[in-house]
Length: 390
Image 1 (cartoon, rainbow, N blue to C red):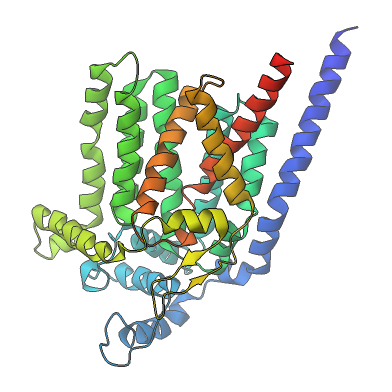
Image 2 (image 1 turned 30 degrees about the horizontal axis):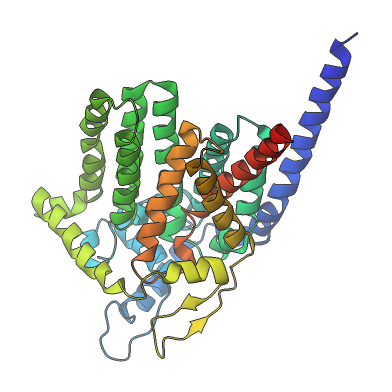
């Protein structure tokens, strides 16, 4: 007789989760449907010459009176010309070429530069969900809360309108590098999961400027070094898998190597990319003004402070709750799980990185889902703490 109420509760719980699933995915699904021709129409070959003409009259080629092309146009053109076998450094040199090669794959398979963004976005969403479950006591319902906020906010949805861009291509690798590292720690099956972690880090540093991958690696190493039961063997094992990341980076420049460049020159290219990106080291700590108060410190013309249309109130709320979580942990009121510790160190490391130069909301995608997860965790723990002490 006692079994039926339990079964009924399980059925109701699953129905609620299914309804919530439909609700949170309705808006992004409808948005993709509205732009279905953009993502699924096979007509890149008809657009290539227009992309080519636009690129060769743009700021990337012309020094006098150039046309200004957006990143998504550059990425779409690069994907097409990379497919023809050109040495990638002859076209772009602000980021490594793997992200644009992934766009080339989309063009090759679908005759569309945007199609591959859809599966990559689904993979990113899956990764956020999986990490959410690891951090939120494996609760399906709680995991939907940060995921639902993330995939329905203007910044995430805007990536469908401005596509293809490298941020969307890189995001799943960032997320799954963290996921595989968490699995290595929590499952204590280090070598297999560390290999996958290093593979994902290789994709991260080969898709865009390597500093983000370096920051992610730093947060992982910091976690290992801060463990009470410091195990040198685990760190050594992790370090031994890291050359896989460099192999991925080198392979992304295979056309450059075939053109006569050495492997050492490939690493010299990364030094050039670093020097190129250093020009952005202005407006220190403006990141906090943007994420908390929607005050974007611009760096062009008269360098005005303006607002960003993608900003939402959930950003400062989640940031403050994450900080409160840390304070309560410091005063031993709350405890972080191992999964939360890893995510928290990533949030801190990436926030510091965003604080040392000018920033825009386009760089927030690798941060927001994780502060949402930590914020939901903090609220749940504070509620439990209140009832435990009541």
